[in-house]
Image 1 (cartoon, rainbow, N blue to C red):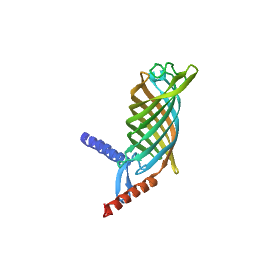
Image 2: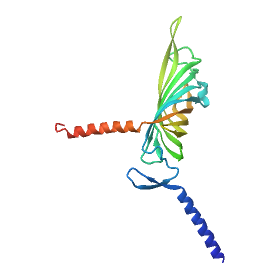
Image 3: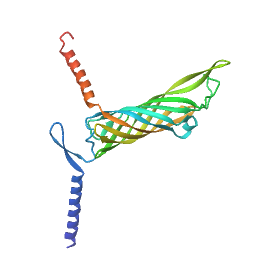
Image 4: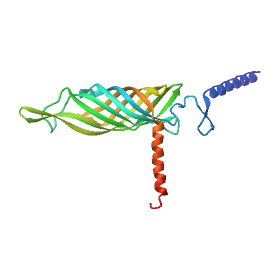
Length: 246
């Protein structure tokens, strides 16, 4: 009797598990007309799409000892959201354009004066890859990847006893960025929110460079434009191969 009871319990739990597993998956008709079983959190909105990330407004917040040199100012960002063949992954190249208040800490050979309340600029190019999950019209994502940036620091150069010229010194910095965010689909566009952490392997004024960023902006579908550009290049390549003089 005990064995029958345990068998009944095991069978019931197994059946419930199978039912739950089926509920976690659904069928999708692809462009080729074949049925594919995918997880309910798999991205079906961005599939085979290319989006341009524009109109982004946010802030770059210096963290740790970076705050001894830099102050918070407004920031902006441009980028692309490129769906990869595997629906779970995304390529997310972007360009951060940060502006900071600047307080120089160390003198150098370029100037005999320290800068206070100046302005520094940082243009940081990111090439991250990530994964995302879909919840109806809402998609969340996490990305990580390398970055390279150009940092401009202000300098005060004395040309005469009465003239001080504003100048800039630049520095190339390598680093990495990790980010997380979400976008929500409206008709014809997405609104997105992104937060990221950028760490540079270089330093500014002998201080490590760490930036926490927040952005809000729009994503617009440019898949048709991208497809047309690819088609034009493919046709040119075909014409070159077909030319007997080549």
